[in-house]
Amino acid sequence: MNLVFLGPAGSGKGTQAKRLEVDYRVTQISTGDLLRNAVREGTELGKKAEPLMREGRLVPDDLVIGLIEERLAKGDLGGGILFDGFPRTLPQARALDEALARHGRKIDKVISLEVPEAILVDRVTGRRSCPVCGTVYHVRARPPKVEGKCDVEGADLVQRSDDTAEKLEKRLEVFRTEIPKVKEFYREREILAEVDGVGEPDEVYDRVRRAVEG
Image 1 (cartoon, rainbow, N blue to C red):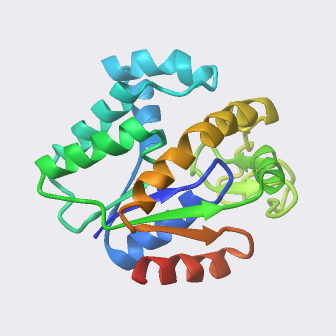
Image 2 (image 1 turned 135 degrees about the horizontal axis):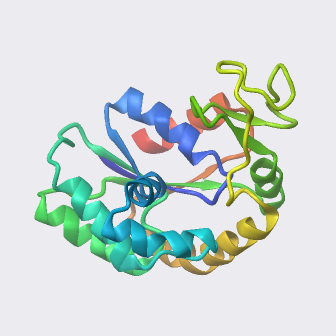
Image 3 (image 1 turned 180 degrees about the vertical axis):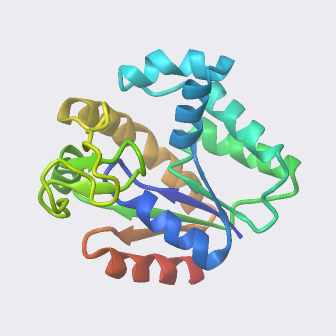
């Protein structure tokens, strides 16, 4: 099974995607993770993407597709793929189809998590993470036991540079413009499912699973 998981920053798609990865034995591919790894490793694609990411701008399609092509070429995705937050533009959606076809694959289901923007702002701007173990907290909804400290490592929690209201607004501008086109592309193929992303994580996951299996 090859899945696409869409949703704006703060929708919870990353958390839900990890659960799907375990239950359906698919490999989660996050373009955000691929981009950050490329920047950290100083690859050619990473050097081109870094200044755009720093400004909160959309990374060009050719760079993102290049990262996806590199990942598909590794040949370790036999159990299926879960694309987390990709494609983000219509050209990316078309390019993904072409890339998958070259590997004898196709997208089977597209899940879109729907969350009001006011809730997204609260979730994102209150998010903090541990730089050591990666555990994610929220200053109000999921605070650490000791303010500003990771429960596991004791390290000082940090706010990601793109988890500010200003950066979120830039990301949402792109999302409002591009994602409706992507959703329509998959809706026409009758593989799109829009899922309410508001509620407790377990409740949302139940809806997601029903959408996948439906």
